[in-house]
Image (tube, rainbow, N blue to C red):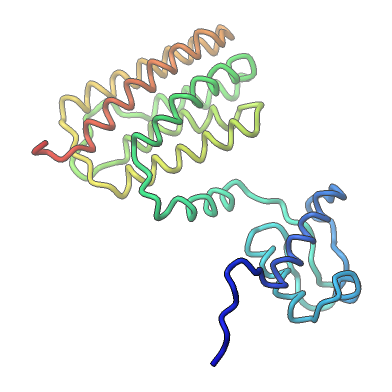
Amino acid sequence: MTAEVPKNIRKRSDLVADQIKEAIISKKLPPGERLSDEKDFLKTYRVSKGTMREALKSLEVQGLVNIKTGPGGGASVARVSAEKTNELLWNYFFSRNVSLEDIYAVRKLVEPELAASVAEHLDEEDLQLLEQSVGHCSLHGFEDNDRAQRIQELDFHLVMADACPNPVLAFFTKFILSLLARIIIHEELNPDPQASSEHSQQGFDYHQALLMAFRERNPQRARQVMIEHMESAESFMLHISRPKNS
């Protein structure tokens, strides 16, 4: 009978993966930089080939290293993508029943600061993308089983995140929007056609007001408009997520 490994004892390969990760950070190795070859790795960390390869495979799965096999192959530092990081974070929240209330509690804090932060940094190309996003949004109601409009309305906010000079604020905005998009796509929503049409018109008006604040390079005005926009969006989304008989 095989004895169980205590839960607080980590695998040797995981410990080695952590050490390699720390070495990448401490040496400030840039994406594309080759890491040590296998012989040097084995000498440095004093582990078997199997343990070392398992450690590197773990880092590859995390998106931290690239591994190339064959002649001239080896491990190199990867550029971690926002998409990969979002995927890992979503796995964390997968079984935690994230609600619309949870999302908007954070969104109401983050997005007004996002709007203020980009107000003086948007160039003409960014403004054109925002105007295109507004133009793509239909002002018709939210039809049964058609969630495209709510997703389309998020594009305006993604353009702002892409232009944000603060990478932390930009990343968390995109992640929050990705959580919201998943709820829109997968959960049962019960929109009232008239309320949906009114919300679409309000969203259009808020986006236009934000564009005006951006063109005026007015961060205070942009923040205030976004506060009102988020309060309106929260009220609508919570309303359409309730069962029809409630």
